[in-house]
Image 1 (cartoon, one colour):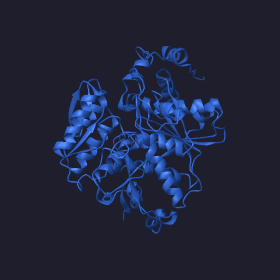
Image 2 (cartoon, rainbow, N blue to C red):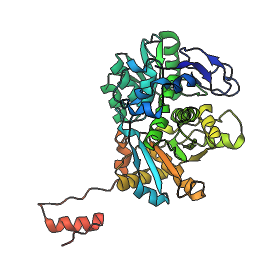
Image 3 (spheres, rainbow, N blue to C red):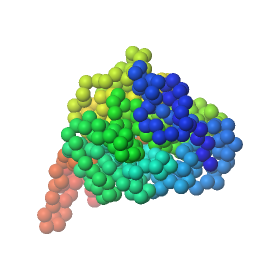
Image 4 (cartoon, helix red, strand yellow):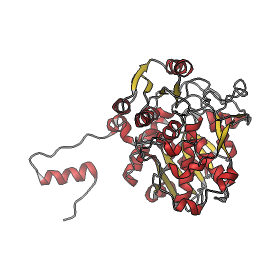
Length: 423
């Protein structure tokens, strides 16, 4: 059973009951807006959750029921979680790393890590009397919300923007979501805020600024990333965990998972967390020492659209500070090259946003902060099949062989691909 006791502010610790609170801490709103996070009776959880008890449980996120929202056992599931942790030996050697691992979230049901948030958030939707699920999203969050709302039998409204990646929007529509586009993010947020306040919609995404993060019960779903990684590494946690970051939901959730495992005595230490960002707001906040994450200049259009925000959150900053972590900026011009390199070396076709994490790893290796023998886990947030247009646009033209000409075929293999067939 779940041992959820209520919600608490990540920054000041103010406590609340098990309530539908999605707008952050009222105490911190003026100084440094902060999200709330679920709290659990860890002493009670420790009596039921152990290395031994986990060995006898089925796979998937429900196996961690003591530290997830109380209705998780009855939640609508699509088989989320239990994604592979892949040792990327060949690509790791390029970076000078012996132990580079990739947590491949592209193998979740809707193709991204957002399934963890949607599954856990929707576990509480009916308890709170939700009439519909509402989400502001241009990508994975909307697709996951649409899929899990369909599974739960709830209407889903997705507010997106004009020009969002067509494959993901099609995925939302296929799952029955009511997709509506607006001209600006502010318009999306304004409409979703109205839906939450007036029409009893259940939000799974941020919907106001300055942002605090997503649905706190949903963010707790990301704790299972830490739980799974530690199980997969036989309870020896990595030295570094690197994630692409927008509002920092997964970064904070994963860090919280490590904190809980350490408090339960299941791991001997906690890793350092790294935020791979596009605008640099978390790096600026770390440098200034302030709690309020600054709003940076509006970023140019990025390939990594899902993390192209100009203001992150206190929850992300908290995870970096608490773990003695770091933030590094990824450049738009390096993402497609990293995408091709990873796919060619390891067979993993990741969405451009995911490659920001590898860019951050490369920087930290060049700086000497990550050592050759350090164990590094990178989270691949989604499959590259979510948006193939950028990859296709950078790919070379495919040569053609006429009339089954074997000699011409061998010439193409040699000249276009550098491959020589041995006689």
